[in-house]
Image (cartoon, rainbow, N blue to C red; front, side, top):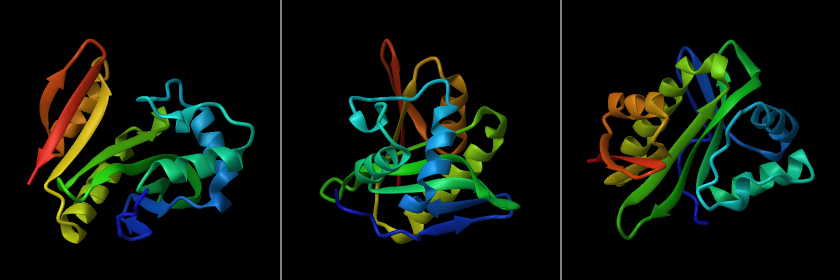
Length: 164
């Protein structure tokens, strides 16, 4: 998978996004084990694996860019991740996604906003797409707050799109 050249660290006063590395494997894996639902979207990266290192490597391979989400005042603790995947230079499109532990949901908007600003500043991407379940109204509302438009609703999937 081709990488998108974006900074390894993005931050504001609340959070730090840091590129996922194999050194993060144990903390990253333990964070993801706490999620009640992990979306698969026909991607084997989220299937159960034998070790934290295997899981982390699989996630790194499945995404163009993936950052851990950390609190600015507790940078050693991983509370989630934010990622770009499905990058297509030909059609100037990338998919975005993110997840945080439930008690840190208010930080996901900040993480996605930092990622979107970086995409706008560093790349010539014209379309950013986000996918979620149709029942995840909070994610749909957050995407709309970020400037995405709700464009599709199927039986189980909702798609939002941000266009430059």
